[in-house]
Length: 577
Image 1 (cartoon, rainbow, N blue to C red):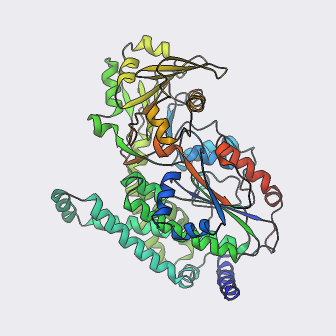
Image 2: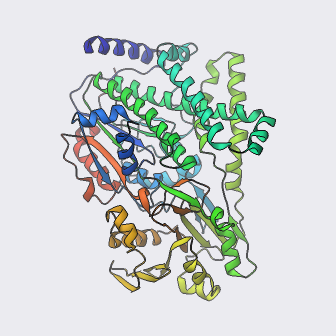
Image 3: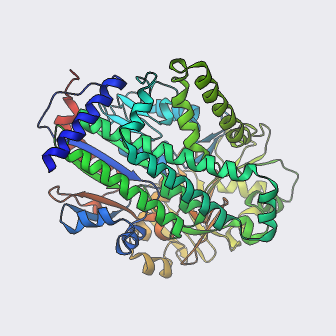
């Protein structure tokens, strides 16, 4: 039976590959590498999902002994661009968060804009990435991949649909009828979830009914998400059939749902069931491929339940800072709308741009109309990012529970003493605020970590001096997390972050009460700092590979392991025939 299925799969994908202009590679016995990243899923929430039957296929493979599962710390700040850069390039020193501000250029940086991501990626142009000769899907950085799809650093280049002509796109769907059913089911389910969980009051229902476009917009967003992930999985399957290696893909379904609803919400766990189905398809295709493959499934960080600072205290962090300064200053605190759900359509429209030339005039007009609609809807956040005030005295840039505060009156970094002289009451007000768990600042090469009951001073040689109660030795935090990150390691991570050239003059971390962390964005689940499940990611790897992720520093050690283990396969890729 397996031989019949192998023949069917190979025949189908050979036909699709011919229609898309993607030839097979020569067969080889070199082990190929497949890296599947589930964005935002913590080790604890993965364990919960496996125990509750939310990911049945993955659970069966682990029970069969094919894989081992381990917690690991992937990097700090606990955000995707930091971990992706460490994994693909072995570099950790260029990214202080998801959002920051370049004081010398007076420009904001946000790691969802292709031009910003390209500028950061250019710093590693002389470094040979992990994915050389392979393919990269739905990532921020391409890692030197030869084939890139839905990847921000190379957005706009020919991608998945570059070889599709006319009926070729119809053929892709026709030969995969199961995808049609999955897409329809995802659209209906996501639309119902949005209606049920987001519209709970009579006023909201009435407002929704008075604006029929709201239902259309919800369904449109769900369709984009479904199409993106089906095309992503199809593309991985195609490259597995062709024998391409290494392959790297990021699935963001869980991350998006967890930010919106919470990390253990039923909607977030339903996203994991969908990802489990994609993993089953990828794993099956790998077993039918023309070369052996090793599959690694991992996350870049976890997600902690969150309460927004503005909701708890009735004003934003920027408003609080302005009150503390008590002087006439201009404040730039850009609170971006939550546009994650538009990300799928932006990726799809970038791919469809190159397809317009092959469509009929009517089809091309439909694609252009869809692109114009997506551009109008998604441009709100881009406009807010570009409206950074060039003359602002204070700039706040938040990445979940991590906020960088820049005193922009000078392009040079400011020390704690200079800030205290300028605004004498600011530091005390920040340290005493119940929503802020830690205030981090610099004095030369010495880093100060300040909490309400004490401070830890990290000197240039890495040694610490504690005054009062150690702000990192919270007994509740260590008891709940099993001392995954001990105070010394946490101090070193924070000191490294504080010394990055583009970090804020002050770094603030939201307070954590043992269950929820205060976030400076409008989120129900968050990551980017310390506290709770966001710190502990997971790694699932083949049983016959000797790994010890518990002792790794971060994703740089994963990069080193993969480069060392698959070096021969990475350096000598088979050529298409």
